[in-house]
Image (cartoon, rainbow over all chains, first blue to last red; front, side):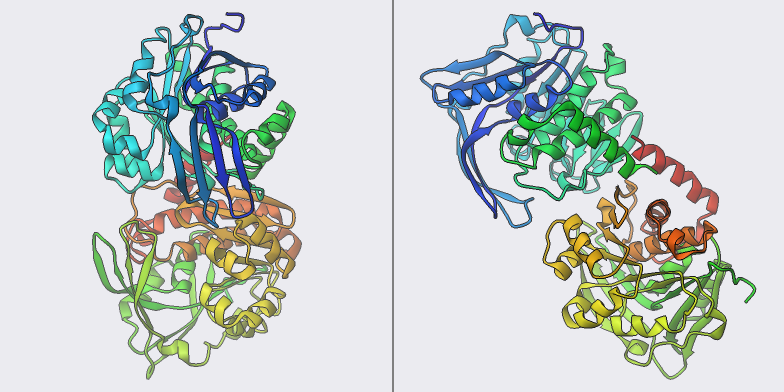
Length: 313
Length: 313
């Protein structure tokens, strides 16, 4: 409870063993997963609590890497000795944007969700990493003091669990999804129009992620558009979306504001998205957490300033 | 010569008779062409000189529409009674981004380029609308006092006239092209990397256009990234790139700076791209110049302020 504050941040998601093929290189059995990328990114701004399950096959080095970030509370990392860790293999196309899945071994993801430690119950900011919306919903009761809840989702759940997703949307403040998913959910091709429709489903704001093209924030109180940081070094895009969310939620938690109204305000969310954008721009510069492990807060602030200068009107 | 200033702006390009099919509507034989869109957009900022050829079939209403903008000098509009005006037909896909060409009737474009009136010889800012780079080059001698020259190009010329294009690039200050074309010209997929390669070919800056995703400016003195204005009203994207260029060059001309160094400076070009972005966002809200005809400078300034607020960090 040492790190407990009214704005304690928690992420529920996955830890994975990733295999990533890009046109230039291959990386086998590296640390991945939504909670992993999120927590590493968020830790640059303050403490973050991680809730995820892994199997007995989780390499010790993965835990050590997460420990390296210092501010990730691993009390919610549930190791199941007789289970397998979620494993994913993906291959990126020449453009480093489209990818195909080579394999998915669900492992612990086919079992019960991880148990949320009682010490996490006072979390004020909750990020529900991408998983079945029914599972995302089930986590909410573990965080009775939540002031800001943001969920990620994907096309699979829109296709096979839309009714659960619609219930979830009535219970979150924000939703992050990519532009194709926004269209799939609403039938609207224009990302702003699609996002407006999603606002009618419950959330106060929607972040439409466009990868290398940045993101659009559609909030009940305004719209913002952010280009991605125009990096030339894209080694592996895996985890960009999760570290974007981690930078966003982490920087929101660090503002010190504590109420639902303030945490989810247009101005706070917009500023937080810039931190998310900048944090994600580092993630893609190497495989796994390799770049984030070497990153300092000073590096991050320097690029934040560069980015601010780039988009200044 | 009434409008002549050290920063007189001229555009060389096409006037066309367009037929545009979108998933929602069809428009037959409407006013189009690169010089048309450019000049209409630029005219919101000050006088602009148009150089283009048309045939005897150019509808009177088209000339009247161009006249409506007040500040377009049509002395360089060369009507050839026995020739046909360039005509193009295109059909947009559901996403309003990809399009297929239904037909192209080159007409006057197969003949000699239009003659530049002597009254345009003192033009300080020159925009070479998309055409064969050999033709673009031939225009340069007509503008001996030019301080800033920017060219547009397309995949066709990169494929069939690359050597002429490389000569052109050694004689312009800026190049505008889309990200696929930047890759085609350089073999580099990353737009920033591709643009850096183009800088080595001659220009001081490159504007990589990404359509609904905005643009990236890669300048010898810095990089800027601008999202598009996130409009929900996209009726017809035709002319967006040309009116983007028109808003950019028009606003540059209106700064009052007159030297090559100042006109092409990173700061001036970046600010000008914002005006280009905002102007283009109106163009797509209707077919042809229908939206620009109704637009006021106050509307433009209002959206500029909105956009500035949207991208503010």
